[in-house]
Image 1: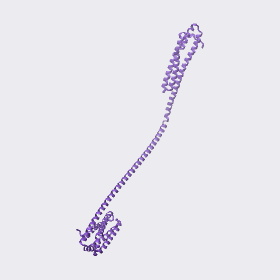
Image 2: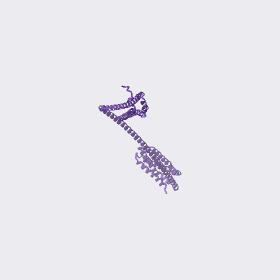
Image 3: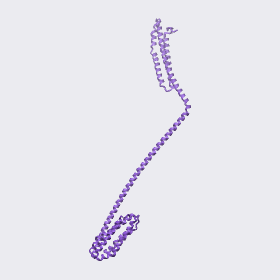
Image 4: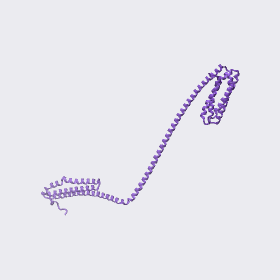
Length: 371
């Protein structure tokens, strides 16, 4: 079982280790100083609290140790003041190291005084039962406080882990947002570059087309100037072809007019012959009077009228055909067909008329009125 002497002598061990480690830190080791100072403060506060809760009340009961209580409380107060001042000091400053050294000296002096003055008086004044009760209470309290500190430390570590994880998630979100923003900015830049490239290409194409058009216009002008001398014969040939087409068309119309005149001549001759024949018949003998019905029948032959009508129709068809002809060859063919038809019909008319004369009336029956 731990004695009161062992308890008092062993209490400063943990604090001395933390002091030594904290003094060896540099001004740049801010996180290490924060951690070590926090542990040192908890250790010194634990010792002072256990002493004030369990040891000093027992010492007040004895006359010879009653005066030590005030000195112990004063030492604890001085230690707390130095801890508060040290806590406010920036951890990256030279003043922090100096104040840690000062606190260390004060603490070690208290330890020496406890061993030299405080411990002998306490061990003499307290009975074994009282000392055992004090030791037991201090150890139990220390165990409870250590458990609470461990729980608190675990909670701090858990909280720190949660905060770290939260910070990591937030950092990841920020990085993701930055990546997305960078991607969007990159996409916008690419779109802008593509648009600029398209505009540049369009301008280049427009400029190229303009130059090609200008070059083509220049070439056309040059060719036109060079071809002025050769264009005159071509224009003359085209004019000759147009004149030939006009002459062919005029010839075709003349041909039609000639055909019409042929028909008109035949019809006029037939009419005049019929009038002369009638006059002749009216002046003949009874023998000639017998031939009158035959002559009238001959002149009224429908085939002669059909020939005349056919001549007129052919003239009209030839006129329409010439108007729609596509070449001089077509005009010549139409002209040839019309002339051949007109001559053939005129021959048929003359043959029929001469046949009428030969069939018994004779040329003597016509008076010679036009000699």
